[in-house]
Length: 127
Image (cartoon, rainbow, N blue to C red):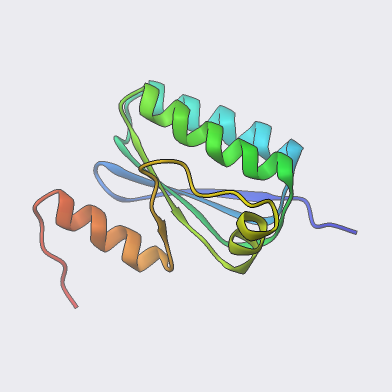
């Protein structure tokens, strides 16, 4: 039995929002993801979105497709979308012979994604 996806949303910086997903990224979770990305991007609440998939156990073909569409939709509204990928995302990409969307970075940790956004905003990170 698969674990239903749980979503979390937090804002670590004024222009960055992190969407965290745990559980299974399947068709149902993919629809929720697409709605959330469209809402955040259209509202221009965060020009930088980070999709944290490190707590995802399984990514099926539908979930992977939703990630690709979310990236496209974010760009359409002028937002960026970076992926923080755990083993499930890497396994899904390998299994389906898929590459991350063009211009989309897959980072190993949330900290790396947030440091990248801080650096691109001209800020500095503190230890």
